[in-house]
Length: 400
Image 1 (cartoon, rainbow, N blue to C red):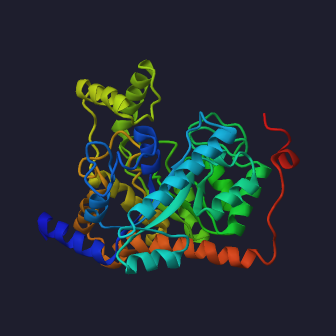
Image 2 (cartoon, rainbow, N blue to C red; image 1 turned 90 degrees about the vertical axis):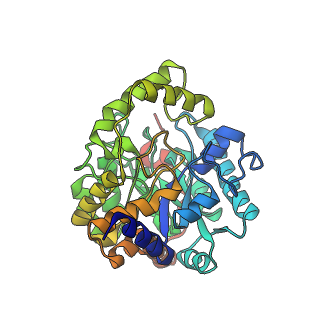
């Protein structure tokens, strides 16, 4: 089949089996760029000069459900981190209210299916960075009541109870309180997200969880040796757990040649007094100037497909998905430079002889199933276990 035919077929397939994307940082981008002023970033119209995401491009990309990340940078802590998380939950609720013909809040797997049936994009919430609960299980429960359906246990730095992939080891994985966080998430029906965590934390979480886990935006370490990626032994354990690993598009996590280049780009940002994750217009000018002077190794849909081929081989077709990380990264693969790009990835997989049933699992069915299974686990646990009132001091001693 010709490449153009594959792209046409990909669009047809996404009409029948739309993408559930595990991670999009639009709420943080709205915070950074316009202070949550939705009049200044009307995503009903093209925002390609400012964002990776808007409604026309979500439609063009065949997105049927989106986990919107309510992210908190790790230089925020305590009540400030909680407030930043709440503000982003608020903006997602405001987006759904502002664009009711296109976005529909979803809290359950059934809600996802209902939104899809109505032709709307199911909008779910995922909290990125366990520090946003401020070591409080009551705060965790409050986030769940507001609609948060996964918590990424760490971001780029460790929490007081879990080690991050990109920080110096401190706990050796999960502490006792970290295990209690996982158990409480299981009881609530909130997915445990193991993106960003250390391999030791991944393994500890898989030992103690009573429900399936996800990786909302991570790729295969065997294909690109970056600590943010998933080792093969962890991928191989997903069938026993029932979890789903959602491949990300961030070049430094998928293309070995991009790892060193991105490190130099980050150092350049710091030299200009900017955080390396800053995507404000000022920061992007610095990034684009560096890129012009230092041409970037280019990832493509084929680069992402290499990860998916490997993840399917190791974890199985029932345990993989997609989590692009749009609006959370300065750089993206050619052909996947916005949320309109998903058909290019599906076309690449068609070229590799992926079947329609396998692609339907990748795009829609696996993500819906893992949330449904977490809900079922919670229904089984709640009659046996009430809300935990354990504190980190009781279980681990006073935080360092």
